[in-house]
Amino acid sequence: MIFVNLPVADVEAAKAFYVALGLKVNPLFTDDVCAAIVAEDNIVLMLLAEPRFRDFIEGEIAPRDATEVLVCFSAESRAAVDEMADAALAAGGGAWKQPQDFGHMYGRSFRDLDGHVVEVMWMDVQAHTGLTPDEVIAAAQ
Image 1 (cartoon, rainbow, N blue to C red):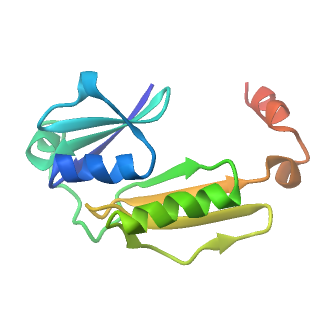
Image 2: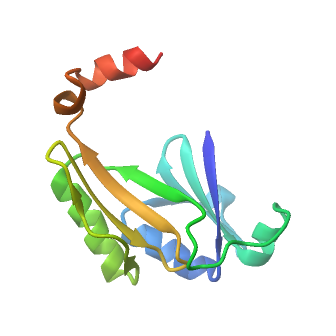
C-alpha cells in the first residue's frame, strides 16, 4: 500500500473537500487528527492535522505556496478529468496551471484547501504507446 501523508489545517474541511471529489473515507483510520481518504484500494491520502503531521517529520512543514508533492489521479476519460477538477473548484480549491491537452493525454490541476497540488490526468495508453493497457501492465512486470 502507498500512504500519501499531507498536513492540513482543518481535518474536517480537508475531508469534506476530498469527499466532494468523489473519494471515500476509511473510518477505521479516521479520527479528529487525521482522515484516511481512499484514492484506490492500495493508495490512501492521510490528511493529518499539522501538529500530528509534525510527529512524523524532522524540520518544517513546507509553506503553503510551495509545491512539496504533486499528487496525480488517473481518470477514465477527458470528461472525468473535467468533472473532478470542476468539483474541486466548486468545493473551494484553487486553479493551478492551465489545462494540458496533448491529444492522447489531457489533464487539469488544482490546489486543495491546504495548497497541495493535485492533477487529474487521462491518457489514451494505446495511442501513446501502441500497446493495450494489459500489455503495458505486463511490460512493467
